[in-house]
Image (tube, rainbow, N blue to C red; front, side, top):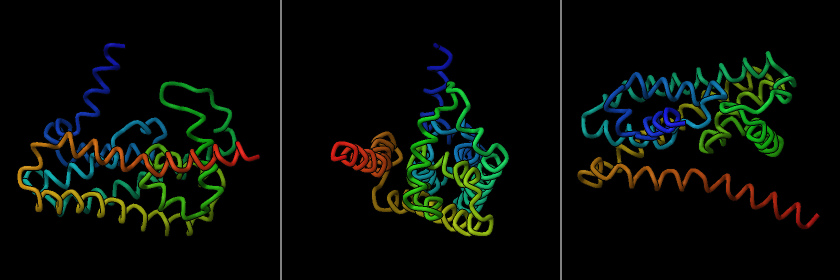
Length: 209
């Protein structure tokens, strides 16, 4: 447990991750979080916003961050789609483990049932759902051309909006990289609002039923 706590502390120390691993680690985390179901706990939004802030400070190259970040996001979802397509409905019978929670898969399934193909875009901004959305699309055998279209648009839009959002914020607020923990808290709160609203709606429907 102590090693697990140390690992999680390392993962959620976004500033430390960027300073330690640089551009390569940022892109690797984006790829794993969007492509592999065991990456659902990784910091996506907060990492990219922080990366944009540090790019403004000259720690990361903005151009390469945008290009490689988009590639990592798009290819990550492609991998998730392939895994979902190959495993099919058998994925729903997998036992829960430290790196796989069936409830996350089922919640994403409901999200997909409601929004259809647009889930691939919307899910980019919802933690956990972002990780499982391409898996569910693969299991549901969404038409590949449709998936690719939404995936490319959603991946690029997600990376550009978060990275450039952080970059612009750093341009407006001097030395904001020194208050990066406050920024991360705000980003995390904003990112969980859509999921919280969806859960409340589901509970109200269940109560009324």
